[in-house]
Picture (tube, rainbow, N blue to C red):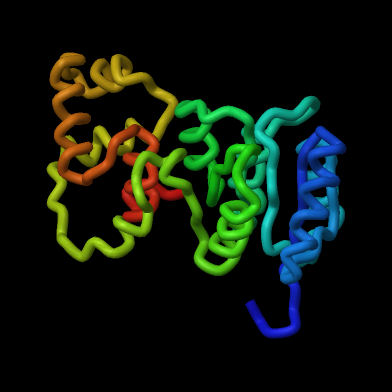
Length: 216
Protein backbone atom coordinates (compact mmCIF):
# COMPACT_ATOMS: atom_id res chain seq x y z
CA UNK A 1 0.00 0.00 0.00
CA UNK A 2 1.39 3.44 -0.90
CA UNK A 3 2.23 5.81 1.98
CA UNK A 4 -0.52 8.24 3.01
CA UNK A 5 -3.17 6.42 0.99
CA UNK A 6 -6.03 4.36 2.30
CA UNK A 7 -7.37 1.27 0.55
CA UNK A 8 -10.91 1.54 -0.78
CA UNK A 9 -13.30 -1.16 0.38
CA UNK A 10 -16.90 -2.01 -0.54
CA UNK A 11 -19.22 -4.05 1.70
CA UNK A 12 -22.03 -6.10 0.17
CA UNK A 13 -24.26 -7.52 2.91
CA UNK A 14 -28.01 -7.48 3.49
CA UNK A 15 -27.79 -7.28 7.28
CA UNK A 16 -27.60 -3.55 7.98
CA UNK A 17 -26.41 -3.82 11.58
CA UNK A 18 -23.59 -6.20 10.64
CA UNK A 19 -22.65 -4.05 7.65
CA UNK A 20 -22.48 -0.88 9.73
CA UNK A 21 -20.49 -2.60 12.48
CA UNK A 22 -18.08 -3.97 9.90
CA UNK A 23 -17.57 -0.50 8.47
CA UNK A 24 -16.74 0.89 11.92
CA UNK A 25 -14.29 -1.95 12.54
CA UNK A 26 -12.56 -1.39 9.21
CA UNK A 27 -12.26 2.34 9.81
CA UNK A 28 -10.78 1.67 13.25
CA UNK A 29 -7.84 -0.09 11.58
CA UNK A 30 -6.78 3.30 10.20
CA UNK A 31 -5.51 2.22 6.77
CA UNK A 32 -8.81 1.61 5.00
CA UNK A 33 -11.94 3.48 3.90
CA UNK A 34 -15.35 1.96 3.20
CA UNK A 35 -16.49 3.85 0.12
CA UNK A 36 -19.85 2.10 -0.38
CA UNK A 37 -22.22 -0.41 1.24
CA UNK A 38 -24.81 -2.40 -0.70
CA UNK A 39 -27.56 -4.74 0.48
CA UNK A 40 -27.32 -7.32 -2.32
CA UNK A 41 -25.38 -8.31 -5.41
CA UNK A 42 -27.80 -6.70 -7.83
CA UNK A 43 -27.29 -3.14 -6.59
CA UNK A 44 -23.55 -3.77 -6.31
CA UNK A 45 -23.37 -4.90 -9.94
CA UNK A 46 -25.41 -1.85 -10.99
CA UNK A 47 -22.88 0.36 -9.21
CA UNK A 48 -19.99 -1.34 -11.02
CA UNK A 49 -21.71 -0.91 -14.39
CA UNK A 50 -22.43 2.76 -13.71
CA UNK A 51 -18.94 3.45 -12.32
CA UNK A 52 -16.51 1.43 -14.46
CA UNK A 53 -13.57 3.65 -13.47
CA UNK A 54 -14.16 3.37 -9.72
CA UNK A 55 -11.02 2.36 -7.81
CA UNK A 56 -11.85 -0.62 -5.57
CA UNK A 57 -9.11 -2.36 -3.61
CA UNK A 58 -11.32 -4.96 -1.94
CA UNK A 59 -14.90 -6.21 -1.83
CA UNK A 60 -16.34 -7.93 1.26
CA UNK A 61 -19.16 -10.07 -0.09
CA UNK A 62 -21.82 -11.86 1.93
CA UNK A 63 -22.56 -15.33 0.58
CA UNK A 64 -26.22 -15.49 1.62
CA UNK A 65 -28.28 -12.51 0.41
CA UNK A 66 -31.74 -11.99 -1.11
CA UNK A 67 -32.28 -10.79 -4.71
CA UNK A 68 -28.77 -11.79 -5.86
CA UNK A 69 -26.59 -13.88 -3.57
CA UNK A 70 -22.82 -13.97 -3.20
CA UNK A 71 -22.21 -16.92 -5.52
CA UNK A 72 -24.25 -15.41 -8.38
CA UNK A 73 -22.43 -12.11 -7.83
CA UNK A 74 -19.05 -13.87 -7.96
CA UNK A 75 -19.99 -15.62 -11.21
CA UNK A 76 -20.85 -12.23 -12.74
CA UNK A 77 -17.62 -10.71 -11.45
CA UNK A 78 -15.54 -13.58 -12.82
CA UNK A 79 -16.90 -12.89 -16.30
CA UNK A 80 -17.09 -9.10 -16.16
CA UNK A 81 -14.69 -7.84 -13.44
CA UNK A 82 -12.01 -10.49 -12.88
CA UNK A 83 -9.73 -7.77 -11.50
CA UNK A 84 -11.80 -7.42 -8.32
CA UNK A 85 -10.34 -8.82 -5.11
CA UNK A 86 -13.16 -10.37 -3.11
CA UNK A 87 -13.34 -11.89 0.36
CA UNK A 88 -16.46 -13.97 0.87
CA UNK A 89 -18.19 -13.67 4.25
CA UNK A 90 -20.49 -16.34 5.67
CA UNK A 91 -21.85 -17.92 8.83
CA UNK A 92 -21.31 -21.36 7.26
CA UNK A 93 -18.12 -23.32 6.59
CA UNK A 94 -19.82 -25.61 4.07
CA UNK A 95 -17.15 -27.20 1.86
CA UNK A 96 -19.27 -27.12 -1.31
CA UNK A 97 -19.99 -23.40 -0.99
CA UNK A 98 -16.37 -22.55 -0.18
CA UNK A 99 -15.16 -24.43 -3.28
CA UNK A 100 -17.74 -22.70 -5.47
CA UNK A 101 -16.73 -19.27 -4.20
CA UNK A 102 -13.01 -19.97 -4.65
CA UNK A 103 -13.36 -21.42 -8.16
CA UNK A 104 -15.43 -18.40 -9.15
CA UNK A 105 -12.70 -16.02 -8.09
CA UNK A 106 -12.97 -15.29 -4.36
CA UNK A 107 -9.53 -14.53 -2.91
CA UNK A 108 -10.53 -15.36 0.65
CA UNK A 109 -13.33 -16.90 2.71
CA UNK A 110 -14.01 -15.79 6.27
CA UNK A 111 -16.60 -16.85 8.80
CA UNK A 112 -18.53 -13.94 10.29
CA UNK A 113 -17.41 -14.81 13.81
CA UNK A 114 -13.75 -14.33 12.83
CA UNK A 115 -11.77 -12.27 15.34
CA UNK A 116 -10.95 -8.63 14.46
CA UNK A 117 -7.24 -9.51 14.42
CA UNK A 118 -7.70 -12.27 11.82
CA UNK A 119 -10.11 -10.06 9.86
CA UNK A 120 -7.53 -7.24 9.70
CA UNK A 121 -4.83 -9.70 8.64
CA UNK A 122 -7.09 -11.10 5.91
CA UNK A 123 -7.91 -7.67 4.49
CA UNK A 124 -4.27 -6.62 4.32
CA UNK A 125 -3.12 -9.97 2.94
CA UNK A 126 -5.65 -10.00 0.07
CA UNK A 127 -4.99 -6.37 -0.84
CA UNK A 128 -1.21 -6.78 -0.80
CA UNK A 129 -0.65 -10.43 -1.76
CA UNK A 130 -3.85 -11.56 -3.46
CA UNK A 131 -5.00 -14.49 -1.30
CA UNK A 132 -5.97 -15.30 2.28
CA UNK A 133 -7.47 -18.53 3.61
CA UNK A 134 -7.52 -19.56 7.25
CA UNK A 135 -6.38 -23.07 8.13
CA UNK A 136 -9.85 -23.68 9.56
CA UNK A 137 -11.43 -23.07 6.17
CA UNK A 138 -8.77 -24.44 3.85
CA UNK A 139 -7.61 -27.46 5.79
CA UNK A 140 -4.06 -26.49 4.93
CA UNK A 141 -1.58 -23.68 5.46
CA UNK A 142 -1.33 -21.76 2.18
CA UNK A 143 2.00 -20.40 3.40
CA UNK A 144 3.30 -23.96 3.51
CA UNK A 145 2.47 -24.36 -0.18
CA UNK A 146 4.07 -21.00 -0.93
CA UNK A 147 7.31 -21.99 0.79
CA UNK A 148 7.49 -25.54 -0.49
CA UNK A 149 10.22 -25.59 -3.14
CA UNK A 150 10.01 -29.34 -3.62
CA UNK A 151 8.94 -30.32 -7.13
CA UNK A 152 5.84 -32.49 -6.90
CA UNK A 153 5.29 -34.74 -9.88
CA UNK A 154 1.65 -35.37 -10.78
CA UNK A 155 0.48 -38.03 -13.20
CA UNK A 156 -1.85 -37.10 -16.05
CA UNK A 157 -4.86 -38.82 -14.46
CA UNK A 158 -4.12 -37.11 -11.15
CA UNK A 159 -4.22 -33.74 -12.94
CA UNK A 160 -7.52 -34.69 -14.59
CA UNK A 161 -8.90 -35.71 -11.20
CA UNK A 162 -7.80 -32.41 -9.63
CA UNK A 163 -9.51 -30.42 -12.39
CA UNK A 164 -12.73 -32.36 -11.87
CA UNK A 165 -12.43 -31.89 -8.10
CA UNK A 166 -12.48 -28.13 -8.71
CA UNK A 167 -15.96 -28.40 -10.22
CA UNK A 168 -19.32 -29.05 -8.58
CA UNK A 169 -19.15 -32.77 -9.40
CA UNK A 170 -19.37 -35.32 -6.59
CA UNK A 171 -16.63 -37.96 -6.30
CA UNK A 172 -19.10 -40.52 -7.69
CA UNK A 173 -19.74 -38.30 -10.72
CA UNK A 174 -15.99 -37.83 -11.20
CA UNK A 175 -15.56 -41.59 -11.20
CA UNK A 176 -18.20 -41.92 -13.90
CA UNK A 177 -16.67 -39.09 -15.97
CA UNK A 178 -13.21 -40.69 -15.80
CA UNK A 179 -14.60 -44.19 -16.41
CA UNK A 180 -13.13 -45.43 -13.15
CA UNK A 181 -14.59 -47.10 -10.10
CA UNK A 182 -15.46 -45.00 -7.02
CA UNK A 183 -12.87 -47.05 -5.12
CA UNK A 184 -10.15 -46.00 -7.59
CA UNK A 185 -11.20 -42.36 -7.26
CA UNK A 186 -11.00 -42.68 -3.48
CA UNK A 187 -7.46 -43.96 -3.97
CA UNK A 188 -6.54 -40.97 -6.15
CA UNK A 189 -7.97 -38.61 -3.54
CA UNK A 190 -6.13 -40.15 -0.60
CA UNK A 191 -2.89 -40.39 -2.56
CA UNK A 192 -3.08 -36.73 -3.55
CA UNK A 193 -3.98 -35.63 -0.02
CA UNK A 194 -0.88 -37.44 1.21
CA UNK A 195 1.39 -36.27 -1.63
CA UNK A 196 0.33 -32.62 -1.36
CA UNK A 197 0.05 -32.73 2.44
CA UNK A 198 -3.52 -31.45 2.52
CA UNK A 199 -6.58 -32.66 4.40
CA UNK A 200 -9.67 -31.60 2.45
CA UNK A 201 -11.09 -31.05 -1.02
CA UNK A 202 -10.86 -27.32 -0.33
CA UNK A 203 -7.13 -27.71 0.16
CA UNK A 204 -6.95 -29.50 -3.19
CA UNK A 205 -8.78 -26.64 -4.90
CA UNK A 206 -6.46 -24.07 -3.32
CA UNK A 207 -3.44 -26.06 -4.48
CA UNK A 208 -4.87 -26.21 -8.02
CA UNK A 209 -5.49 -22.45 -8.07
CA UNK A 210 -2.09 -21.62 -6.58
CA UNK A 211 -0.22 -23.82 -9.08
CA UNK A 212 -2.35 -22.80 -12.07
CA UNK A 213 -3.78 -26.25 -12.65
CA UNK A 214 -7.10 -24.42 -12.89
CA UNK A 215 -7.63 -20.72 -13.49
CA UNK A 216 -10.05 -18.49 -11.62
